[in-house]
Image (cartoon, rainbow, N blue to C red; front, side, top):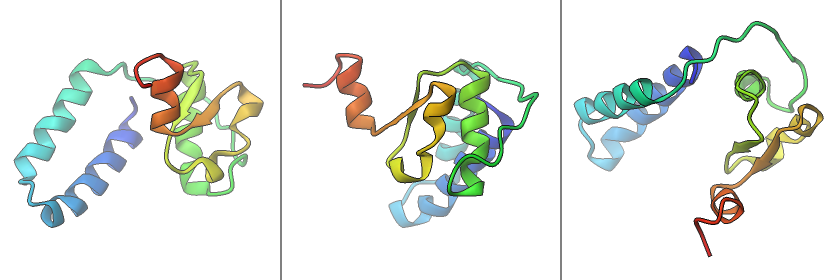
Length: 103
């Protein structure tokens, strides 16, 4: 987890909450839970520019700082290039299959 990631989650979740009929307090509780169970990573370097979308660079930096093997996203195309750092972009379904949690 990083501050930037939580702020991104908060922005998207609250934007979609009204459309989905979810109260803001529910979103806030979920984000609080992420903060409690997540492991905060400090980003001490910048890998930029690597990715097609500059707004996604912080996610690659976070994945690299946490020594992640995968970057789970529906947006595979914009994360091409992350392989240079040993991080493979995969869809959620592909990730679940990889870890044996999906048929």
